[in-house]
Amino acid sequence: MRVLMVGDVVGGVGRRFFATVAAKLRREGRVHAIVVNAENSAAGNGITKPLAQELFDAGADVITMGDHTWGQKGTELAYAGEKRLLRPANFTPDCPGNGWVVVQTPLGPLAVLNLVGRVFMSPVDCPFRQADASLKAMPGGVVSVVDFHAEATSEKIAMGLYLDGRVSAVAGTHTHVQTSDAQVLPNGTGYITDLGMTGPTGGVLGRDAKPVLQKFTTGMPSRFSVAETPAVLEGAIFEFDSTTRRCLKVAALRIHESRGGE
Image (cartoon, rainbow, N blue to C red; front, top):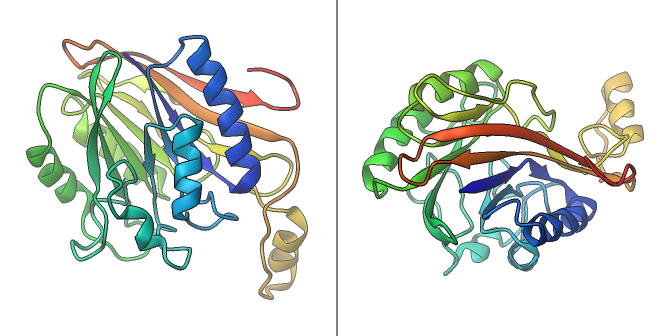
């Protein structure tokens, strides 16, 4: 089973290019399932029900979120009746939505768990304890992947080691900068510290550079808009043994729109 996990989709530019790449990879038979982080898909902040449906229609099997989960007014409506749209499982239980789901792929079931970090982030429940609780509730004997949406590389590396051998893969999101440490951990869990970003290149983390530079140089508040430049899709393809659920290999993926390929 080959699963593509896609880094944070930013705005309309990111959504459009995700659809293009997802269709190509499906057509070529390179992936059996796609998990995409979309917490920046609505103008760079959150998601809406129509945009979630757009991403599902474009090829996403599961959508994960993060600290911008509630970035759009009425976002809670997007979770009604849609189990494939996840919010971090370590949000308070009173939040709408669910933190994990099992979906069917051509090669069997795939479980997806969404967690958010605590270091340099807003207060949430402990992601490590929540990982334990979620794994107890999730069905055993299936390929399972985790999107850990966190700021600190140390916290993400720690989560990878904590879950090594207990899940099939742990992929970090949030920083929008792809890391070069894609690997299979000692006990068979695929890992990468950050998948990167799917959205405009040439700006600052998918935003237009001018207002970002204005804030850095003056300290004054500035409204960040999504850049309108050629896109990049970043993520990783994990290949799993469907019987043992161990990761066989993981390869970081980066496709530039302007270059026409990887």
